[in-house]
Image (cartoon, rainbow, N blue to C red; front, side):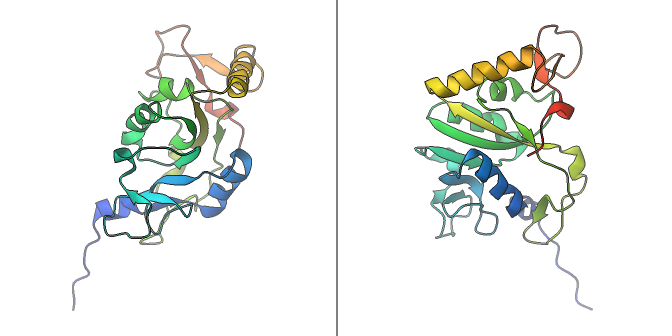
Length: 205
């Protein structure tokens, strides 16, 4: 009896994709981006995309982090370990970034994200098929614990975007719109005055 070949975990991780209909809803609300920064030929949400596969001749180029981001609007669903790196690179360019990221109140990159959004973030409604491995067809285990959000970011802010950001922050501080609670950046007590958005108050996409 032939032994079933083992699947490489790294390959599986590279092929996770947000449900196409959810990505399209994001684009209808915030605008269609020019490029997908982290994709492959089977996970790309847009016709123009960066990939890590050097043999993919259909991609715009290889490795988004190694290229200029001279696009007006970008879509990114990076691995959580790369989010801070993505934000630091983003600040070297300009435009809008639609960032899909987990809701982790203790994430070290959260303050950086909050300083950049100009419209309120939204939570992605949980469903079993929200993320699919395009290699195996399997859904992501324990997806409900990931609590994905889409965060519209702008840098540098236009006058209109800066006004939107100020109005949003004023609404938050006054208790309107999204409610906030005082917790530390690490997600625990001990840092009064540091604000973070409460997950249950994020509107659904």
